Image 1: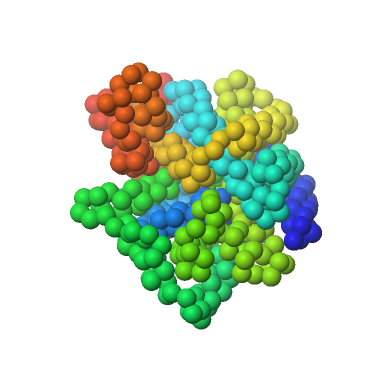
Image 2: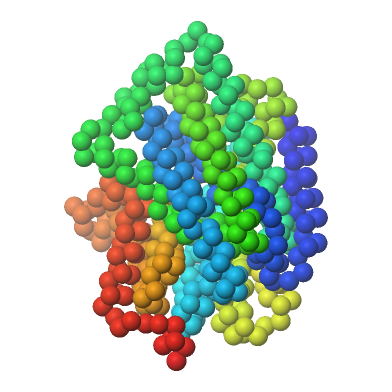
Length: 493
């Protein structure tokens, strides 16, 4: 197993460094020069979008929650499909029109009068939340290596970080997309082969059937509402479906794939591949979680997020388990490297080039800053992974609300409302990050202030993934309505 795993890591680094030869400029580092084919970008987008949160976090969530977890999968599937079917073409055309390489740069193109404010604010949000996201991927890699080889999770995190930083900081977008395409194939193989074999085993075993096993696993495990009724059931479904909102333009690492498309034909090719991939992947993850309850019971692992490695090592020959676990680690590496790239290019392209040098810095210097920033953000993410004890699902959920539901309203209003101006954009971003932090930190905040009677768990009632989106959207609309119409011509003045 170790030999196969090491072979996979060597293949990953080798492919990434080989593709790095094509990175000659900052435009190559950020978007691959917009010359990569649609099928490759679609596979990259899916590998990037589905990280440790899907294979470890969501699988563990299904295993721990039962049938009610399906709503989160439906929310993600609807969001991903909407992004590809409705918004991908718009992202590509707007990127071509503006010449923007990043989302902050696009916002600055639309509203140049407040370009500096927009660039700094956007970069701060991206970097802050992506450090948490990257940390979650490193933590996931550490968990898998610990479960599989008994390796100290800290060393597992360090190994994952070294592999990613080695080629992501050198090759940028071109290397990342090439490796993503390979990893996406490994991931979908894991998520199709594993549940099919589990389905055969559940059907042919003498043990309880799936629904009977869910009933025995605990109260509400066999219910689509977790045993809740009435208003409580509605809240549970809504909170899980709320993953949908973050996909509406709110994920810069996914938007980069749309922006890097060659033409509309490649967008259509990518859309078809991405949607089909997602359907199979989420169906597979749900059945892995539920099937594990039927085959192993609800107490097979102490940490529910380790159920996938447990399933693979228990059910399959060592060589097949190693290959499929490589698919799991592939998800974490793909997402971490893409997060690093987006955060680093925001620092180099939007702050260093756009603000410090006002667009006049030499391309080679900007490229060097991108590589150094990639390494720096990666180190911060590694430190976070080694110092936090929160579940991957929880960390990603917070980051999803903070960045996804801050940027999504800003993107939607910029794309589809001609009256929308820079004041509304800044409002959406500030309201988004402030709402997320306040909503999640509320119990600790009021406890610190001695107001224990106010310390209700807001996140446990209605998720920040929904609240942040609607607050940011609502305030941005109000600010735009009550201010004079602001056009691009007025901004240029």
